Image 1 (cartoon, one colour):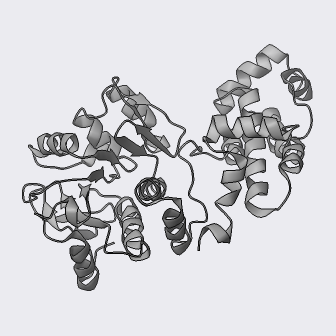
Image 2 (cartoon, rainbow, N blue to C red):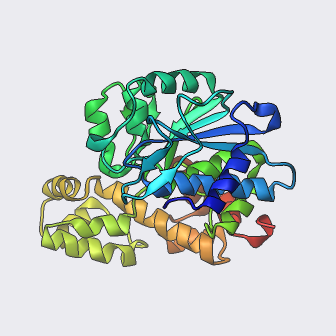
Length: 347
């Protein structure tokens, strides 16, 4: 959405003078080019703004919105003009964090000829840099993702991997950190990335307070998936397999071997495994683990069950197996995951 004059004055106050350095706060640049995805800008902007209000001190972040074009007005994918603080040519000063917001279509990206040179230079000078959603395509155009692992919106992962073979594209995580480069998945995942940066700078308690203010109930770890296993399975076109997939979430406590599942749809284990991977995009074992992980997460979020009870109800068998899967898949313990939902941690 376009920023009204009042909103613009607030952003300018946080952004301050472009010559200010990090002694007066952490300088954050959010770079935008058309056709801008508005939430990719305003989601992280809200996170940094709330962090300033809730940190209990002078503003921690000095945020400037920078246009990659020749003027300060950038069109969004909604055809709504967004008023930035400065163009990239006008910006002078240091950079702590540089983030490139996403665009709606790679084929319609428009920026000035020397913008990528500026982006490379500023990213190399900054403490950290990254992208939100399809902003990864712009970083890749500048060569800033070469030799790195990166995330982007799942719909553009194949395009990013095909067009930029030097980039290791991970289609699953919400966000990825590779050294001082941070890239996020689609749209709302930019909020998760910004919260992770706030947690890195100011600690978990401030990040959780910001999450609560934004009615984001969990500071999600980067290793969590962009996808829901239950919803993803609904795209299966093979009817017997689709019916089996619909039954699986209610039967995750059972012993679900490939042999048993193949028998239920009248197929050989080998053909079943091949069809499953073709239709669902992963092995039966991985899909079942995804379902069990989703079930465990829901219970940790909303119940006071013990870890043994959660493990049993979600089909993991023991609390130790549950802990191992959480650490391997989410990079967090079940106890810490649950703590993210407790109000005591948000005060």
